[in-house]
Image (cartoon, rainbow, N blue to C red; front, side):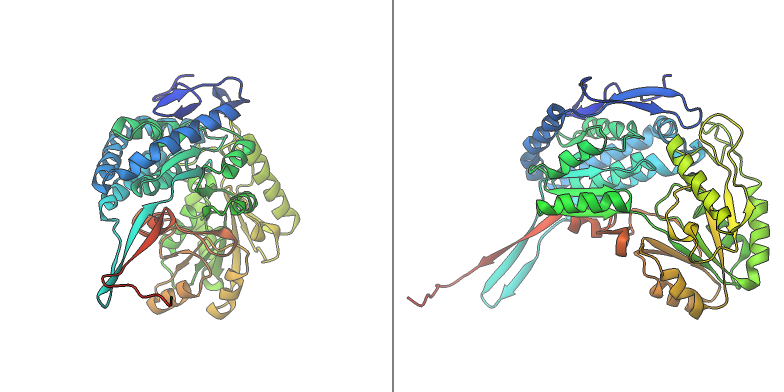
Length: 485
């Protein structure tokens, strides 16, 4: 199968596509049909060395450019990405299976937003002057060096851009390893950055399984590691990076609470629950999959939710009318089916869905369980699929400890008309990214990240700059210097 903007080789290194067929072959499977639409090869040691050598060689000259010059290139890349949004969205849909209705407005567009935002910020990255009598100190904000980005499979274009844009704005170079499940889109990000004027070696992409990621993380030429992935993967990568005292950002998983009080606007609350559970077929790390519904609104909420889910158009994800697509892979579909069976076995009440859709590909129905209790597996573990767990609660005092009773702390949300309660609940959430009367908005202007086991550091906003740069202090003495001998 051919498709728009099809990459021409497995890796992008030093400003060009590079192939090494000695690497383990990785099939690219279209989730809507299950058919193989391409093949890339995992990076060999030679490819890994080539990518790191290119990134290291390019870094000093890239950092020596002015922030304005680097920013101009990033902004030009954002313009190219927007001009090619249709083709990039089609490619993203082939890569992930997400409906074009989503990818055309979320994926390359948010990648372009990040490139534009950090491109505009690059010229503003300055140090500080600290007067100390007649002496003074100034600080310099400097690049870290070579940054390693490791991506997840749910937002390949966005994640490649979210990590690359602040890294490059600060004067770093990057080697990015996409998920082996969705290897295509990051190659186009690299190609666009090079076309926009980024020198060869500034942004490189290599493919591979976990062994490639491990080799990259442990390589002494890597100064910073940024991972988007699961908590188990995060623990391994964090430990390996710590051995080399590397800078680290971890954006990991979640089991986020969404609290709906009985004074909430019902239609908005249902919309929030749909966006927080079924967008991208539920494959979003920040999803609010524990939906706590106050008892007074529970029946109305479940009834209206079921009506709205019946309107989901499940079909060909390349059709702009389709609003619900397949899971990313057969393996992920099987994992989610296991959780659905476990929910039924443990006594949760299946309200909607629960079955595989009778068509090719990896489709599951949107699934809703009610009467879920806090100790059920579907209320404790991250499912990463279209499965909503609805839990009852009496009042705010009861629900808050339950909402926070999780090892995760990525996101949380609340729906209520009570403004004071809304802010009180948001302040009480043990989570890094919170929402009031909305869910899963992720503008580049706002920091994004988690607490507890859900990660360290922040993506996006000016907060990201601190994670891709370091401060150097320079003390300047204006007079004579005394010493004891």
